[in-house]
Length: 518
Image (tube, rainbow, N blue to C red):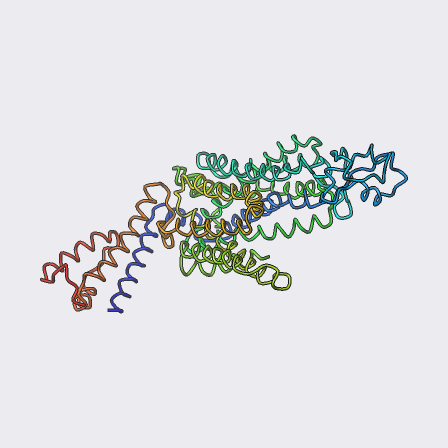
């Protein structure tokens, strides 16, 4: 029985492989540019490098608005006191930051008066600690006290821009091709990046910041789709996973620049200079041949060249697992790791161990799980959606990640409502995400669908094939399987028709269909 099942599985796998090779568009794409060659390597590297500015601009809020001590400016009437004496005199002990101070007019007259009798008034002007960062958006626009919420709003504007870019640019790319919106995004990113470093008005800065985010979001989706469409065969698994790796490198570059450039304007200007290098893509990239073929532009496709650092371990491990077990399984495994880590962090008591090292260890493992789930999910999403809607589909999927980034600061503050409430919510959401993966089909071994009908046909056939296999195991007697499985050829084009012929042969042989003698 085991040998028979193995035989059937091998035939089923061969059937999937032949179905993949018989996909007309896959064959044409392969003939034009090959599975993987110099041209695909060039495009893959160029698309992966676009992950660098995504890391720079999505994460540099950490250096634009880092934690910065500030104090109320000493009035001229207190020049006889040192800065430390002034702060000791004016600050109420219940205030962490000097948003409210004792009324300076009263203090100047009666400095020793009982503080309980002196009213608190808002500080009118602040001075900032520049020992670590010489200038931040906090010090430039006084984003403290009642204006502190504008820091979170700045990051929310970035994420909303990424969401909008992930919707608008993919629609453009699906209709008019990948190259034009990609270059438009690079140009917008370059211009907006420079503008953010020189604008003096906060609201003008936010407008430029939003436009920059739109470009970043659009480039993220289009570059990924390009990387998946220019390769085929086993490389369609390898390249989209490795595509994610430069994001971690971008984090390192950003941190290194921020170490030497402690003025946020200088940092943004330097990122703009680096982003300008991507303008060279105008001479280096061509249109996606698969999109040209899907839209009937075969001649243009043939004209294309025929020469055809915590997160990094997660990406590499993801690559090893996904090539052997498939996309859906890989996403489930890494998502399960992250979900379990949320629960473990909840169970490990706080401040029981030195530096809470067990919680930090589990958090690191959970982050590695997330870094493995993200590239696998990108690949899985790209393979689920058809060519003529792939950008929009992947953009829609990534939209939820951006929304999560926007609500994350609010989720963290829920710890004040109930201890560990953020972790509880994250654990629940993580397990719910696992449940959402259950009804989705596996895409390993299937050709990329080019239309919605292709996607439905491929996945329907794969699902029917599994049903046929399990029904054969349940309904076919052992003695019949051993004899007949070697004699009846499985139809490689339609597994359902094969199953009907097997059932008919079984009924003619006199074996009851409703009994299983095993």
